[in-house]
Length: 371
Image (cartoon, rainbow, N blue to C red; front, top):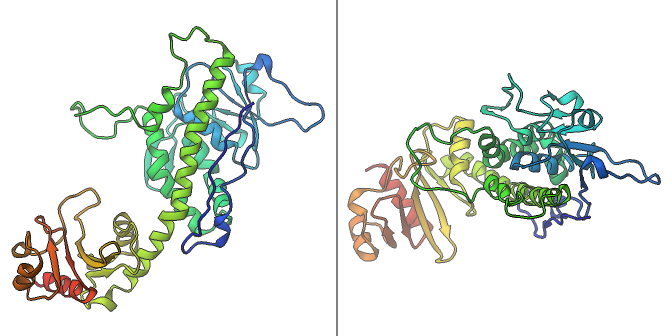
C-alpha cells in the first residue's frame, strides 16, 4: 500500500476565514490501484467504491481525474481498477477515460468517443479530457471543502473558474492535441517540463525487464501523486494568495477617485500580485477610464514606485508610459527635469519609476497623466 501526504496551510491567511488555516484535506488515505485479477475486499468493512480507468500507458488526465474523484464524498478512498474489459468496467461505480461513454448521471467520464464536444463553459471552449470532466462536475465540491464554505459561495465559484483557467485547461488541451498557438510555424524551443510531459515520463520504460501489471500500477500511483499534488498546490495558492490579492485590488479600484479625480491612478494599500487581477476586474466592473498608473511601496527599499499599466496582460507596451524626457534619468538629474523632489529613477522604457515618498510618486503620476 502507498499513501499521499499533502502539505497543509500553516500560515494565517489574509482576508479569508480563519478556518482556512487548517491542514489541506485529510492525509494518509491509501490509494489502492489494482487490476481485476487481484482486486480484494474485506468482509469486515463496507466495500470501497471502485473507479475504473484503462490499463497500459497512462496520461496526465486520467491520473489527475482519478486523484480528484477520490477527494469527493461520493468516491472518498475509492479503489482504482485499471482495465479495458467492458464487462469489468460495467460493474464499477465510476469510469474515467475509457468505455466510450460520457454520462455524469452514471459517473461515466470518457472523452474519446465520436461526437464528444463537451467544454467547461463560462467562456472556455477547450474540449475536455477526463480530468476536465471530473473537475467540471466535482471541482466546486473539492474547492468548497478546502475553503470550508458552501459550494454556492462566490469565492468558491471564483476559484473554480480561476483554477480551470490557470491549471486545468492546459491539461485538457494537451490531452486532446490542441495547439496553444494558432500557427503552423515550428516552435522556437521544446518544452518537456510541463505537468503532462512529466506524468508521461512515469510510464514504464521499454527497457525495463519487469512489464507486469503490478509494476505498471505502481507507476500509475506515482502519476496520481504527482498530478494530484500539483493540483492541490494550485488550490492552495489560489486560496491563500490569489483570492486575497483580488480583494485588495478590488478595494483599491473602488477608491481610485479618492486618489485622483481622473480615476486613472490606483494606489495599492498593500503590495500583492495585481496585474492580472486589474485587467479582469476592469472588464468585470466596466471601469472607465482605464487605470494608467499603479502606485505601491517597495518595502525592501522603503521607496514608492509608480508603474505604468500594460496595454494588455501579455504586452510589454504600456497604456501610457512615463514621459520620454524622464526616461533613463536618476536622482537629482531626474528631480531637476521633472521639478518633483525625491525622484529616484525612471526606466528607459518608461514602464516604471520611483520616488522616495508616496507624495512624490503621486505627483509623478499626476504630472505624467497631463503630458
